[in-house]
Amino acid sequence: MTEEPRPLLRIVTGEPSAEELAALTVVVAALSQRRARRRPAPVGAWASYGAAHRRPLPVGVGGWRAAGGAR
Image (cartoon, rainbow, N blue to C red; front, side, top):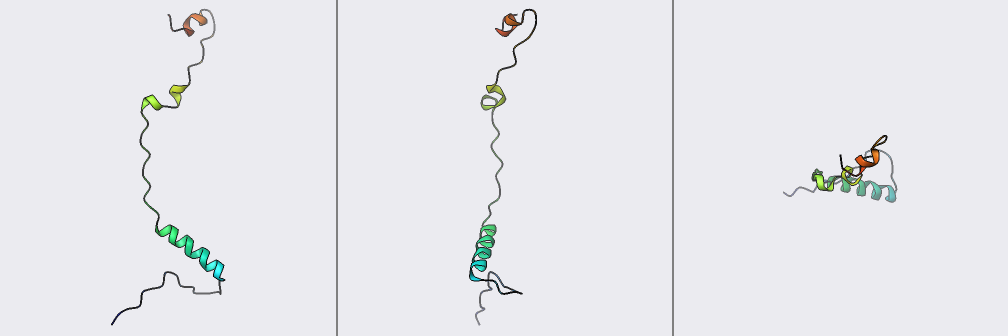
């Protein structure tokens, strides 16, 4: 004896239209094909977003000297 394959969906109540059944089938099929999420690769310090911005300029007496890196 060969068993009949089980249906993907079974409507228990109501009478959905062909468009509603098609939409439901697409959603169920998409959810069943969902892959496991991969973690994003860690970003090294050279590509850090924060490193692209400079520190605020020092304010006050001698601030212009400190801004150039000389101390």
